[in-house]
Image (cartoon, rainbow, N blue to C red; front, side, top):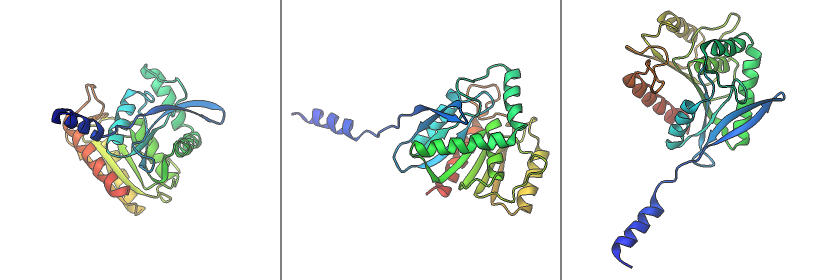
Length: 245
């Protein structure tokens, strides 16, 4: 057996193992939903990922795979229902608007997603929730609900607190990643949230990125800003490393 063959065999058996994800059907009060679960190991820390207003798409799957490559289990939740992946703006507004108007349902769906993640082997005792745009807004709702997670992260999400709510019951650290050029969620909203979190003595970090509009992290979008995306992902990765052990 020659040396080259031995070397090739050694390389094949020492290549890193890549996690394989799968779509997961689950139900909430009899309604069908489909999430996505991926984990590199049985005991990996968990990230609960909440999608943007177009539903659970290839974008969230890509982000989940990126996180799995970093050593995290990920459950990408479904907030709309099995097969409901809107493409028209009117439909996106209708679906998100219905959840904004029914916060108890939003919280029920989040808790069901977390329970489903646990059934898949996710470590919900060592977990954070994160989301993009609509998903970021949802994550802050989860934080205000008193969900027992180690952290809550929003990428260019809505920052306004609904009337009658506050952060007094929030557990875990908040990380807010926002674009200064975002005209949908303004810097006034950003400043107001900062004051709320400080008044409630909530452990938080809030970062803005110059020139970054709403949805700055969405690949292949006219709004995508590579610099803001890479910097925010780097900070998010550091945050996960510090928060989940």
